[in-house]
Image (cartoon, rainbow over all chains, first blue to last red; front, side, top):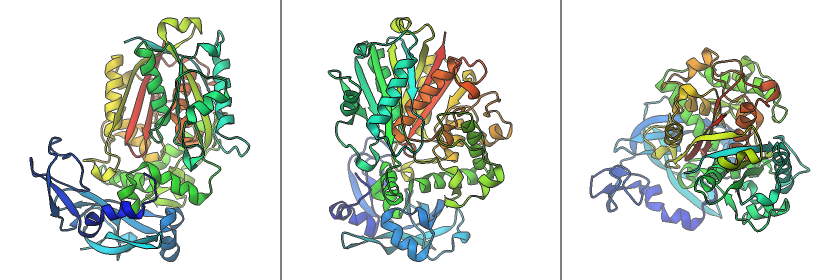
Length: 138
Length: 387
């Protein structure tokens, strides 16, 4: 896998990007996101039912990426808006995910603050707009 | 399992070498390794080669190992590239040790090389991002420094640690780098300057990050029973271990400890019948300053949350009880990805034989090397000792 996320690669994960579709293990009930082939909780479950996560949780940790340090596909964003925060969120259902934090001054971010997922435009590559989840203060 | 020894080690200077490609760098490290073998080495006795390289920039994507071993005249032998991101070198040594310990091979070359300075800043940022779980981390706009920054922010929160301690790692390793002629950064830095550098990914600033580097390293791994054919001062592999974890940090239960490192260290200590208290010096994976603090704890040098105290008390300084990164570490010596893990072993080889010059640690008997892939997806640990 390269850093480049092709359209087919992206398309396969649309349920996760758009609706936070996770796996609930039929053996132990644990919820995992992003979905994996074997349940990370019980290590035996290989069958799952899809569940949609609420997208709410708390900031587990965060960083603020300096504009000049952004990956190439985010340089346009960094050029227009400068540094941007990325948070790791512990979702209420258990799994942790990473996403950008919007509508929040980087100085106001605190570990433990409540956030919720929102649908946003991520970037444009191969002339295709990629949408996905970001977070904003709840 | 057979006992394993090291009888030769060499490396290029790490840094910026516009005139040298991967072939030239590899040949230079190989030549220094050959000349380091006290009783001489006829290269025809080499049974196999493992070469660690990530291939940053896509300079050579296929069959890079035979390309390089062929360049130095080693043909006919099994020659394999080993790739586990920044731990590619550690895993090249790991495979060489396994090959000798198993009894299949007697004399094996373990090497690593990386050419990173040919890339533009933009291409470099593109390539440095490829060792995480790119499908999810990258789409959040994360960078490699960003992942370690998240780890640092969480560590600082969990243990109420001031960012000063991150900068203290940079200050220590830069001071050591000044003493290492092979180091890329041979410039001391004051604490105030290290603390005040511009942010790369908050809370990490420029001085918290290792540089991008060109370089290569090579070591010769042999059956211990044959070591004295090559030298009267062999270095023995007392223990070795490797581990892995979920690549994505968000998939892990904790991010202030690396399971891959803990597993690798546990196996190495158990095999050697040694504990952290027996280690006289260590070369640990300080790709970012926070990584060195976490390494102290994962390797058992300090309890959880206790790493800042080791720095405060100077334990890991060159003149301290347990010097860490006497070479300057990745931070000051440089971090040519595939070469790093091999270079760490080469450094401990020199230290145990009293050949480390201005940065020589006083009379060490046991040395440890710790090499991490990406943000903790993989790790190797070696415990090395002398007669």
